[in-house]
Length: 160
View 1 (tube, rainbow, N blue to C red):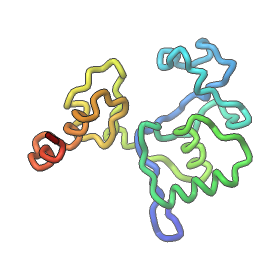
View 2: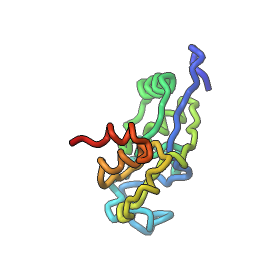
View 3: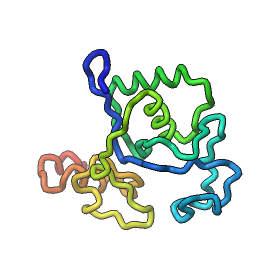
């Protein structure tokens, strides 16, 4: 959609689809994909009063997302008009508000990387990405994200 100023609504990043809403009374047996969740998964529990459906609308993962100014304005207006508790899972809540605002998320999954915490981080993980979640060594990650082959950029990342 487009704002009144002609600006496009942009809500983009690593798309999550068909995500199950977690409730505080859930056990691992209630989860559709128990292997995906840590043992303390109830930290993501949402009360029915905050969101009553069993599945969240499509949303952009909280590792990072891109929002246009008009999208932020619409999401904030929807939030101000909302008569329900906040969904404490921040990325999901932005998706719930965007959905209620009529804004559809755009998948940029190839530009975002969310490696498992146990995965060794190498240059290959970072090449061509806009964002990488769970960075283990930030200085090296920035070098890889900037591209090691660019001598000017390399000089900027090396301080001695």
